[in-house]
Image (cartoon, rainbow, N blue to C red; front, side, top):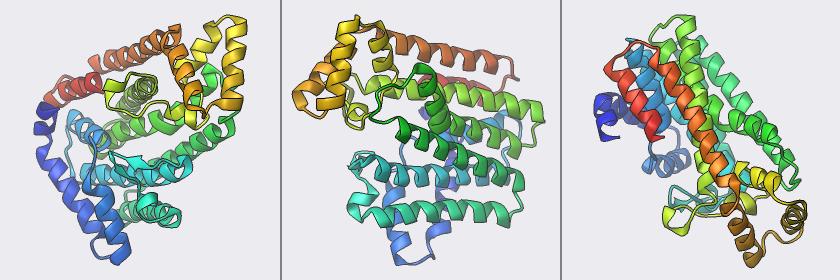
Length: 315
């Protein structure tokens, strides 16, 4: 990660400065919430993808910086909204925005960031970027609604699950690489190729995240959150498919009637960990990762392309 970040150090610093500038004169409460939200920025994978795509296409332009800002604002807005929807109490090791303030502030702050992103694109006549951002917001919202419709039904199929994670996660990863390529003035075909790479990486990323939810205590990640929120992810979906009929019925009964009981939750976690679902999820993750790397291998070699390859392996 340090080698990758060194390649785009100036761009990441410029991103941080521009995000700060955008919100510094907009009133006391927006500034306070923004300062809190961006104080711990996370790994910043999405803006990094934008910059690496722009560099790989030969154009680290001012438009590439704006693209990274748009993605950063969109992602932070989605986190503020998601934590309210999911009733999550923490984000990046700290209390979530809605727990520090309240649901109203968190939702309105997310709306504020989305409006900021669209206004920035409009001010610079970046209509191509704005169109893609608007499409991405719509698809992500569709994914959230689909997930809500599926929660607590416990009949989610693998195909429906993959559709949800494509909409919620992978589409944005594809948008990041597409925005970078567009900002560099890449041909339509090259933009489409990079977008496809991002989508494959995004699915692999979410598969790993869902695998970690059934991991062990030493992974540094809260366990069983998907279970608590009534979501079936691939490890459990495949485990149920492969389980003997009677065992599958017992697990489904537990999910429907006593999933929040601590002992029952431990039983479900143990069931999934001992099932083929964990290995199957890892296998699927690697397949999507390898497809992304294979597509990337056919693009023009450069330090940015090599860094993108490394970042995909890291993710």
